[in-house]
Image (cartoon, rainbow, N blue to C red; front, side, top):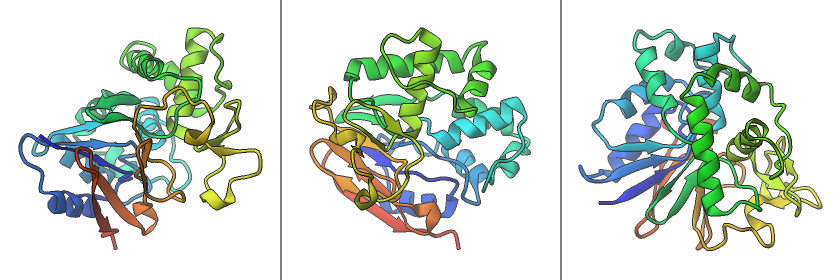
Length: 267
């Protein structure tokens, strides 16, 4: 059994099919998606239908665009900037598709490490990371789902602090899991930065480069940062190679680090 970790698809169905064809997964293999499965690209409906049909074993974590899609569906929100979700929202099978999307956590383990979409606070251990993800998953699958989604989309989460109460701590965790790229050495995040490594402001650094990060020793797989580009070393694997922006769609086979990549095929 092989595990293929896939970067941000963002509704790029043709690119996804090309990547799966290139990988040619066996029936016992699994594709694990690093979040942002939908939105911005032209074919979110087709992407979800393909992933739901069971022809390929699939696991996912949720990214910021996936949470936005859930909020649009359950809260009946109007489209956002560069939003391409309407065909998905209006589909007859939307209830089943959103039930499938909403089941996934913000972080989960694979045999070689932990996968999530954005970043991890440098003070979190691996165990704390998974506990926070489980707490958020429970909230999103229960009666507090809609209220929690409303809090997520207004982006009023506090900075992470272990002294926060459960709700505020989980909102701060969602912000890290889905939006983090850079922070300072104390773990204060700049959630608006989306530029390249060369453009990181003075006093800030990639979240994974903070000295003393408590998840060191666990290999971390993530997406979200298209301008960062692909990176694979013993500590981290960055998988967002900007398919929706005309770049490529990338997967890594976790067992041997073999890279599978296809150019954007949406045009």
